Length: 136
Length: 231
Image (cartoon, rainbow over all chains, first blue to last red; front, side):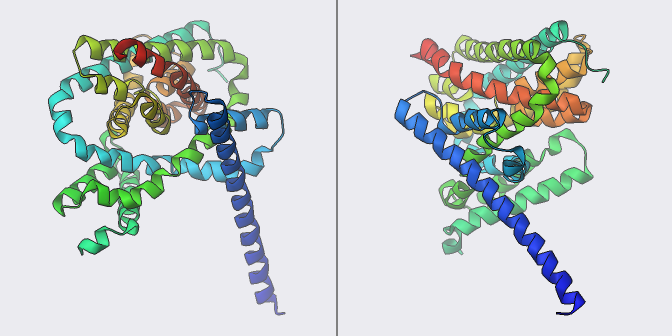
C-alpha cells in the first residue's frame, strides 16, 4: 500500500468511526424516546412520552448509567436544527389566516402582556434571591 | 408539475432551502425581524400561495421533518444535564424564579383571553405560549387546540422576547445578567435563549435550563388550568 492510499484509508476509518458514534448516539436517544412513550402508554400519566424521555435521559446521565459523550453527538445535531423541525407547523398557519384576522388583537394583547409580566417576575425573583455569580 | 407537489420530497426540499437560505441571510443581517424561522415560514407560505399548493400537499414532506421534534425534546434533557453543573449553587432561587414565572405566564395569558371574550379554542391553543415550540405543540395536542396557531404565537413571543426582553428588563431595573437569562428562557424559550447567549455564556446556560424546566412545569399545569377555565 502506498503512503497516500494509507492516509486515505486512515481518514475514511476516522470518518466511519465518527459515523458509528453518531449512529449509536441517535440509537440511545430513540431508545429513551421509546421508553418514555412506553411508560406514558402503560401508566396513562398525562405527560407526553417525549417529555418523559427527556426526564429519563437526564436521570440516566445523572446516575451515570450512560455517558454524556455517548449521546452528545446526536443531541447537539438535533438541537442545532431544532428550529427547522417546527417550520412545517408554522407554515400550517396559512390555513388559519381568516381566523387570525378576526382575533389578532386578542392574540397580540395576550401574547405581549403575558410575556412582559413573565419576563419581569422571573428576573425579579432570580435577582433578589441568587447568590451573586455574575462576576465569574 | 402538480404531480411533483404531491411527492414528500417537495415539502422537505422547499423547507430545507428556505431554512438554510434564511440562516445564511441572518449571518449577513443582524436585525431581529430577520429571525431565520420567521423568514423561512414567510417564504414558504408565499411560495405555496403564489403557486397554489395546498398545505396538505406541502405537509406530506413537512411531517417527516416534524417527526424529529420527538427526539429533539429528549435531546433537551441532555442539554439540561450539561448546563446543570454550571448553575448548581443557585438551583433553588433559579427553580423558584422559573416556577413563579411559568405559573404567572399560564395564568396571565389565560385570564387575559377569558377577559377579552376570546373563543375557547384560542385559550387551548395559546396557553403554553412561553414554552419551547415542540413542547408547546404537545401541550396543545392534550388541550385539543390548534397546533399551528400554537407554533405561530410561540414563535412570535420568542421573537418579541428576543427583540425587546433585555431592554425592557433593564428599564425595569434588572441588573443581573443571570436573572435576565432565566427570564428570557422562561418567557421566550429557545429564541429568547439565543439572545441570552449574546448577553453572556452564563446567561445563556440559565436561559437554556429555564426553557427545559418551564417546559416540564407547563406540561404538568397548563392542561388543568384550561379545564378549570373552559371545561
